[in-house]
Each structure stands twice: as structure tokens, then as C-alpha cells.
Image (cartoon, rainbow, N blue to C red; front, side, top):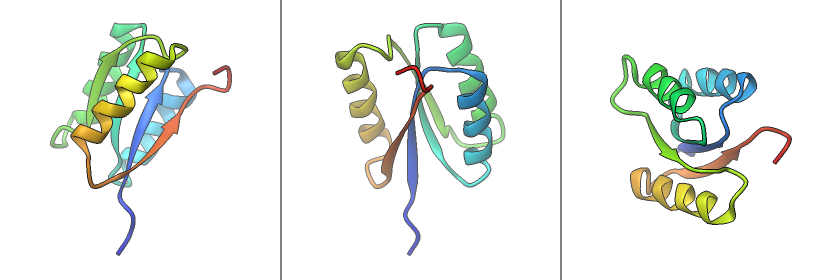
Length: 92
């Protein structure tokens, strides 16, 4: 049985957005966190178009450990049976 994955995206950049698009095509689910709510909501809308809610947005600062913990906890609530992986820009 294949492992089902969910992704915690800590920061929306062109690279993380491209990775999300590719992973969405493989059935991935996403918790997106960014301080830029517009960018986060745009990516969530794009990932959810044509799917059944594969992505959610959590406002917050990906550099803050308490915000990252919130994103990890929300991801676990939304996709409890999936293994979570973190995607973040190299700067974190």
C-alpha cells in the first residue's frame, strides 16, 4: 500500500508553488503558511480548483516556531492518515 503524503508549505515562492502544482498532480494535500495572505490564498484556490479541498491556508510567519507548530497541528487535523513533509524555501 503506497504512503499517502500531505505537505506543509512554509512560504509561498515560485519554487514552492511549482512543487505544489507537481505534487497536486500526484494526489498530494497541502497546508500553506505565509505572511502574504493574498499569495497563500491564490495558491490554495489554484490547488483546490477541480479537487475536493486538497489545500488549506494558515496565516502566519514561517520563521516563527509557534506558527510552524500551528501549521503542523492543523495539517495533522486535516489529514490524520497521511505522512507530513515540510516544503520551505532554502532561506528558512
